[in-house]
Length: 321
Image (cartoon, rainbow, N blue to C red; front, side, top):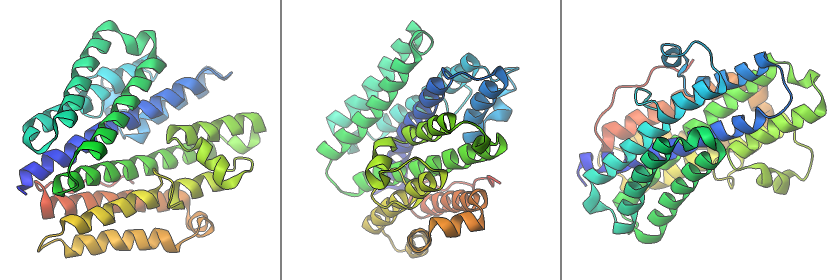
């Protein structure tokens, strides 16, 4: 497969996944904002949404304060924010259009209709009049994209590069959410608050990655920060956990291996082996923030290696530390 074709398929999937992840985070924060809290705490929670994507600097070029509407506008429809839902779905559609011949009709029509309908929703102001409905629509279109891909595409190299894009983006997003939310809990001394507030905080984090019901099934107990971290990092059967995402990268890398990819395969396998062999107690003793920062650096490095071996080469990402 041509590297440019693989690159477009990979980024089509990453951008679609990124749009969904952004919608998930905004939707949960919107729900949390309905809880009784002072304005300072509320402002910090919206600022945290920007920190997850490292967009504070870009945001404050346009806005003075991280209010709910300012953050939603910036993360939903800002054409100058490459991580906005608008830019992500536009980029996903353009990548799909470029390699339309490698997609089934159903996959192309899903990406194209998502982009066309998004413009209608934004023109109608749905993200302002009913943001929860808008975020659910974004999540549904991403689910539909993955489902149509699984249900209609030949599971060849095109399929594998799409899956690689999904798993890399998802691993990056889960690690970022965990890092920001745990740091916020520590800085706000959440343990000193009521157990009810603590429950809603961690439950919201679980819902942001569709893990609330999974947590109840796995642990059947009260929600604790350590178990939340364990589920989202080390539970191999949890679709958005770090371990499950890295496993997905390893499996799809094997399916597309070439003459120069052995070092990248080994790098990915070592990252998976590390997650498989550790425990949450060991991670907490090492320092959750330090561990997640190192993980994000490794995911960035894995993305660069994958691009150099298969796609259009990219420059190494800046450190997230």
